[in-house]
Length: 141
Image 1 (cartoon, rainbow, N blue to C red):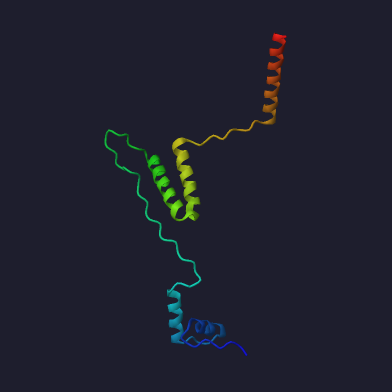
Image 2 (image 1 turned 30 degrees about the horizontal axis):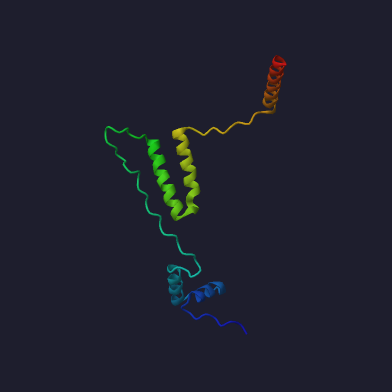
């Protein structure tokens, strides 16, 4: 004995009509439309919309103050967005992080990572140090 069929006028009956290939009646069609309009009990709650972030404190500085260039304004705006989104929805930080890094590098220049010396350069340094030690010990000894 199987499970009883859902009565017409429900979303389950609408899906049954489609599965069985029979014509969908108006009550089932309305029930399906209503089910699509209301949120599912299973769906996780939506995060609140992130508030729009405010521009930096004074976008129009007085005439005697130095006018910030466009890239500095972009960096300041991205910094504000970064902190706002970090508090509200950290999952959306990656794209802002990339933009923020690119803007900061455009203003300050890329951060130079220390270069690793090649094996030949390391060997040359070791030889020079050895020669300096040999020259220094021979002069004192």
